Structures are given as C-alpha cells and as structure tokens.
Image 1 (cartoon, one colour):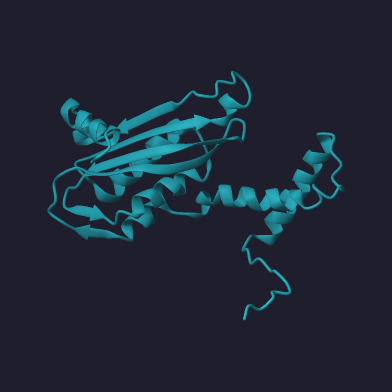
Image 2 (cartoon, one colour):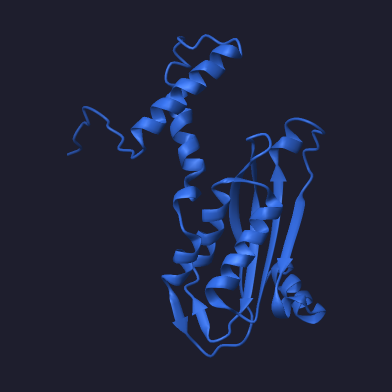
Length: 203
C-alpha cells in the first residue's frame, strides 16, 4: 500500500545570515529592473537566487590542496595518467554569467599517485568561484604540481561563455580553449601524446 505524503519539506543547509543579506540585495536589483517583486512568480526568487549563488560559488569553502593530499599513494608508475572530459561549470567574474565545458587533466607520477576522483573534485573546487578561464587553468595545474610534485602536469579546458553568447558579440558557437603545462609536458612529444589521448575516442 502506498502512503500518501501529506507534506513536503526540503532540507537545505545555507548560511542564514548570508542568505538574508543576498536576498535583500537581489530584491532591490529585481525592483530596480522594473519588475514587481511582490507578484507570485517573483515572491521567493530573491531567496532562491541567494541560495543558488552560494552553491555556485561554494569553491571558496574548499581547500583543493587538502583534497589531493587526502588521497596520495606511493606508486612506481611512471606513465601518463589522464582524466578527461571533466565537466566544468563556473561563473565569469566580469559579467557574473556562467561559462561551462570540459577539462582534460594529466600528470606523470614521480613516486606518488592520487585517487582518480580527487582530480575532478579539484577542478570543481576552483571552478565554483568567480573566475576567468585562463586563471582556472593555471590554478588546477599549480595545485596538482604542488601536491604531487610529478614529472609534469597538463591541463586543457574547452568552454563556452554565456557572456559571449547572450550579450556582447553574441557568437553562439564559439569555444574558448586554454592550456597549461609543466615539466615533461613542455616537451613537444609528450604534449602531442596528451593531446592525442584527449582528442581520440578509445574503441
């Protein structure tokens, strides 16, 4: 027998003080844009946006270095390790509009490897902040280099920017690619191997 649910309560954890401050600010913004902040569709929007923005920027509360250091293992493997097609969602700091795409990350161990899930977590920790794609790429590279001291690190990010697609030049199909390399990946042969691995689909 299926029980009828009488009420629905969604449990969320947000800083109540920050939520209130942000909601009041968004209420003012919506009002200044010429909307009726008291109509049904917008009545709870300021609070919803306040919570959404806290989630979209929760990377400020994460320590990417500690994420990597929490899962380091001694290993003699000396070949390239690649984690590709990592989803990236971030917020452009110039217009506060999203940019999104994929990151491809590789490193060559130097006595230490890291749990594979930690690399996407590091990408997310840096992406969930006010960002520019160029800095995001460098931050991921530098963090992995510092935590693992590998023989080399490679990071490539391909992203679409809503500030280019919705406003300004309005080029809907443009993709921005950034890259950063250290150590062995600065050599042409190693870099080409990495690019080949992230470009090809394995059968």
